[in-house]
Amino acid sequence: MGSPELVIICHGFRSSKDRIPMVNLAAAFEKEGISAFRFDFAGNGESEGTFQYGNYRREADDLRAVVKHFQGEKRCIVAIIGHSKGGNAVLLYASWYNDIQTVVNIAGRYNLKRGIEGRLGKDFQKNIEQNGYIDVKNRRGKIEYRVTKESLMDRLATDTHAACQSIHPSCRVLTVHGTLDEFVPVEDAMEFAKYIPNHKLQIVEGADHEYTSYQEELASIVLDFVMASLYKDKCVSKTSLSGSKTDKLIDSRL
Image (cartoon, rainbow, N blue to C red):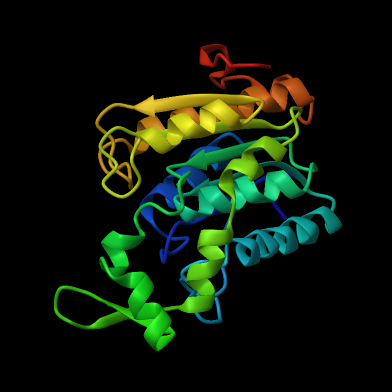
């Protein structure tokens, strides 16, 4: 077993735990002596099950099972980190439970009604009512995944606004978003900042959804925030934080 301190990292929409942002984040924590556990939600990456377009609650439940597993092993979970749809999962988790005091949302979507038409087509509501599903195809006409009426309704019924307001003030939340995000507009990050009680917003100028040219900056921002939170929680000793960059971080509303 590695370090008793652990971060849990969740991937984004239809992606794998082995996507570059997740791998680089894990490596950054491991350099600081903190273990990182990356996992795929059910139906994504290497995990079993069928991919669902919505199912935000199920993914928060998946995260709960992972947290409970490591708590049972007496590990100190210092943060949960999610990218894209994974960002929504960690925030939804934080709104239900108050057992993880540091949460990082990277490029999560605040307005879940936005972006649907771009993926499912202008007449998506009419089509899904008629057929019960919509097959999403790539540019070559190959079906990539199926969106069922049930999973679409789950997405539309997920109240991000209420979830944000339900997060306990003792939970420190960081939202990181790139100004050139091609999937989730940076305005969504501003909404998280308005409604999450204990929140820090970090906008990365020029970064896209995957932080393609900003991997090092993303890792530094997330690492600084988590390490500063560790120092406050006294989950690890001062000596174990030596060499970290906690002096560069200024939290809002702490």
